[in-house]
Length: 128
Image (spheres, one colour):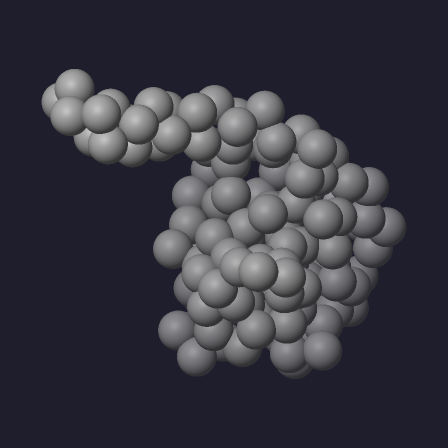
């Protein structure tokens, strides 16, 4: 069994392949496309979180659209960036059943945003 984020031979993807796959992910209007994008399910992914596996997080993996076990290749047109839980859910299927979407990520994102706003407000009011 191959490890995640590996090519058909089980070798880790090269940095240039990772970058090329990242650039295929959907751009989020208003967000820096070098840092934040969306996968095919609409889940937010962050470039810096390649290989990070935090539940409902923005970590992502490279998926073979047509899985290797079904004859899929390592060509760029067969690779996509998927939020890691969506990739695990898809497994060796060629049917993508979205597990995590933007809506699933919204609550944790709002909690982080609330903390940031509280810190900014405290700084503005000279509380800190």
